[in-house]
Structure formats: C-alpha cells, structure tokens
Image 1 (spheres, helix red, strand yellow):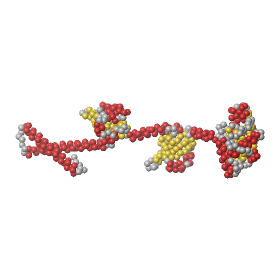
Image 2 (cartoon, one colour):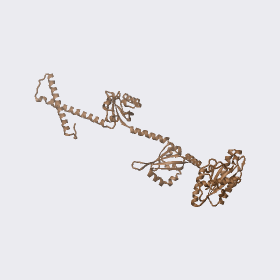
Image 3 (spheres, helix red, strand yellow):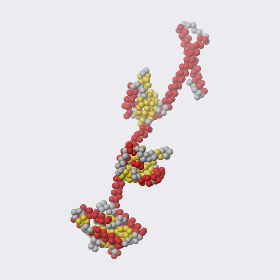
Image 4 (cartoon, one colour):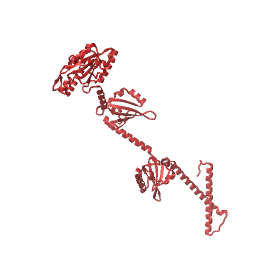
Length: 505
C-alpha cells in the first residue's frame, strides 16, 4: 500500500503492480474456466460475455492477493527495520545454539560480520564462567512453557572485550514445540563497572582506619563508616540525621573561625585543622580533621565530606620525641643543643636591649667516688635530685641544662648586676652541699661553679668557654666554690668546649 508520503514514481510502480496482478488474476481464472468447460464437455465459446465473470472475479482476486502480499512483505520489512534499528541487542537462537537472526546493534556490540555469525554458536561468545549457567537457563526455557525468563549474563566480543548483559528470553513455537529462543538484551557494562567501583569504594571506606562522615548542606549526617563508630563510639543509628557538631563537641576552634572555614571551603573546597573533642563516653582525644566541600554541576553545595583520625597517641609520641630532642633523658633538664640555642637567643636580645646575661658552669666534686662507692644507680639518682635543686633555685625564664656526665650549665637572663649573679651561684652552691637522701643512705657532695658575664663583644662560644675556665679555676682553688674569670686569668680558649683538657675530679 502506498501512503501520502510516497513520490510519484513509487505511486506509479505500485499502480502498475496492482494492474499486473489484476490482469494475471483475470487471465488465470479465465484459463481455468475454459479448462473446466473442456473437462465437463461443454461447448467452448470466446464471446466477451463468457469472460465477464472470470475476468471480474479473477482480476479482483489477483488484486487482493497482491495487496495482501505487498502488505505482508512491507510489514516484515518494517519489523526487520525496527529490530535492526533498535538500541537493544536482539538475537534468535535455535535449540543447538546456532544464530538464526541478530540485529545491527548485536553486530555493532560484538564486532562479528553477518558471514561470521552464520558459523558462530552462542556458546562461542558466552564468557566461560557463564556457559553452565546459560545452558541451564536455555534448558529450563525449552522444557518449560516457553514463558519469558529474565536473566543476566556475560558475553565476549570479537576482540575479547567483556560485555555484561541483562534482558529477557522466550521461546518460539512450531506446532506446539519450542524451536528457538528469542532474546532481547541491554548492555549494562558501564552500570556493572560503576556498581563494582562503588562496591570497591564502599569497601575502602569501610576498611580505612580514617573516619568518614558525609553531611548534607545543612550539616546533618547522611553517612558514616565503621572507623567513625570505632573512633567516636557512636553507631550508625545514633549518628545519621544528627548535626555533625553534636558528635564532635568542644570544637570551639571551629566555631570561632567559621569565617576562615567558610572562606577556605569556598576558595579551596577543603579545610584542615586539629581539635580536641570527646567520644561518646566522654573521653577526650585529638582529632585531625579535613572537611571537603562537594559541589554539583551548578557549583552549589550538595554535601560535605569529613575525613578524620584520632592522633592523640601520635601527638603524644611526637611531643615526646620533640621533648627528647631538647632535654636530657635522665634529669629532664635542657640538653646541650637547646642550651646553646637559648644562650644565643639571649645574647641577641641582650645586645639589642643592653641586658645583662650570665652563664654558670657547674662540675660536681668527687662524683666519680660516689659511683665507685655506691654504684651507678645511686649516681643517677643523685643527678636527678641535683637537677631538681637547680630548677628550684633558678627562675622560670632561666635555662638549666645537663651538658653530660656530672656537668651542668645555667643561663641567667635579664639579671641586674654581677652581685645578683654571685648570689644565685652561692645559693646553688649551698643547695648542692646539703645532704641528699637516697633511701638507705645519705650522700653529701659539693660542686665547683664557674661564671662568665656577657660583655658587649661576647659571643656564645667565648661566653661558655670562659665559664668553663672559671670552673677550672674554682677546682684549682680548692673546689666547693664559685669563680669569675678575671682578665689576668684568661688563657687560650679552646675552639670546641666539648673537647676540654682532663678536668679535676
């Protein structure tokens, strides 16, 4: 049949077909009528009136057959065209798995030509892991009533690409017997990969040691991972829907700097900080937190993601390492390096503000005998007690250090006069001379103290070296005394005060 959208040539072709069908039908029925008369022994006549009925019925019969055939063929072509241009993958397979029909989408997806499909079996392209499953599905379909079955499977393209499909299968019947299966599938490879990726990300989120919490734009919690519960103590039921600030109390630093937070999130999409907060049981912990702003395609905030970890133990270890890097392990006094830094800083300030700075160098008298008589354990205990007395007789702004063995140094910053320095040294001398109670026995020991006082041209090495030499002078003069190096007492100062000549016991 033609329609209004046909061209003139196509209309002419259809009219010619119909005319030919009419003539052919008329001729055939007329010939049949003559042949029938001959068989019956009736007289043959070629008068036009004798052919009216055969021509009329034969012509219109031929016309109707032609119209029916053309419509049937057009319908088949439309169906084939529809199947070939469908986005879904369509295939018809016989009971042995041979392809009876595949559409263009099938060819495009799997890469096989029409010639190759003729010698191809469906089980040749099904992924090896899916063959047994597909055999069971097809068998179930043929042995059942042929109704549709939903299924998913994995195919392999010509170049070996893995393609995930989902769709429906049903049977085509001939005389009550299933002769083929018809399948319509949709490629879900991207969806499968996205689902697998989502599963992978979910596993990572669940297994990571960092806590993860996601909120909506109003900061109501929408997701937490297992680490969140482990760190904070709040379960999923207790957290979902709650405002994030309620589960991270004491975050005053965040509230006070909300302008800074907002600016950082707007400009950089993240903000990182450390806060002391509390778990569900009230225990405090140090939280290292990073907030990420998640935006949609319109650049509007769709969510906030917060990654955090409990760094209390790490912070304590770091603080301990920093402390050990600047302090003597035995006495908890400053070590040599930090003492030199403090002294150098005080000298710079003294030059600027004309302050008076002094260094006291202490060496215990006869400490080796203590170790020999009572043992090194007692010697270490004694050094700890001496350190306590030194701190007790100095100010908070002064630096007290153990330089090694039984040598100590004290930095007196911002003193008013030389007499004040001597007074501090004398108090320390008296404090050390007082008896030390070590439990089972009492020990008495003295110390020799050398003093150097900052002058305008003093450098740190010179200042400490002069205090060291003054201490030697005190040793030579009988120990248990203080000494300030006078100009006539000066001698070449060693370049490295750590490599001094053997000291007096």
